[in-house]
Amino acid sequence: MPRYKHLFFDLDHTLWDFDANAKSSLADLYTLLNLDSRIQIDFEDFYPKYLYHNEILWDRYHKGLISSEELKWKRMWRTMLDFKIADEPLAREMSGQFLEILPTKKILFPHTIEILDYLTAKKYALHLITNGFEKTQWSKLNNSGLSNYFTHVITSEASNSLKPKKEIFDYAMDKAKASLPESIMIGDNLDADIQGAMNAGMDTIFVNHINARPEIKPTYTVTHLQQLESIF
Ligand SMILES: [Mg+2]
Image (cartoon, rainbow, N blue to C red; front, side, top):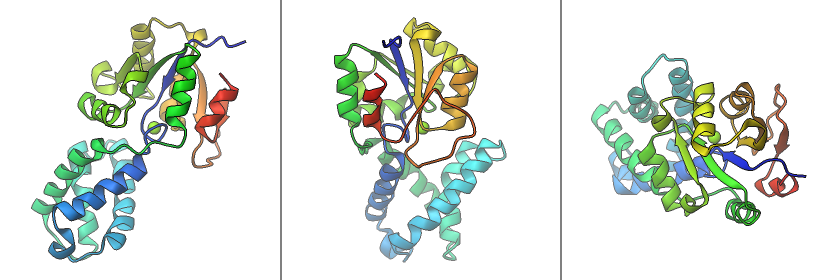
């Protein structure tokens, strides 16, 4: 029955729990930089404001209105501004440390290891297609114990492209020596992973951890990684 041979996974928000890891990293940052006494803002007050500004700035970054560099430090800066603290050097220091800590975190979505073991035992070739830097993504994979599961790890940095662009999917298929009918993309992002892979001619599995209502139609949808067992 299974015609698929090559399974291409997304990493962030699909296997690696980005939000939980980011929260844990910010909590560490608080301790490391002694922020409780330096800025006198409780972490529980800081964190929701950070999420708010982070989302707005990511949106501006995706629209090409700000650079990645601005995104990185301004999310800290704007959060502190909400508490009447204007400290650019501190915001830049926080940003730098945060990005050092984040890829050392290892919180995965439930059943990540079990499903990768299951798929490996069934002889599927597993790969990753991830928008991110080589060093950061490999650090996440090594620290969370995922690196040995994947034959090819395609990052946007190495492929010189970015999901949802067709080029990164073409590059991945070429690297893995995979054909379209035997390949499927598995990811959480409707635009980058699902629409992107559809445009490249691949079947798709939407990992719907947050109960979104997609307007496009993936080949399959799962709400939990364990459900992949019913497909493969
Ligand atoms: Mg993702």
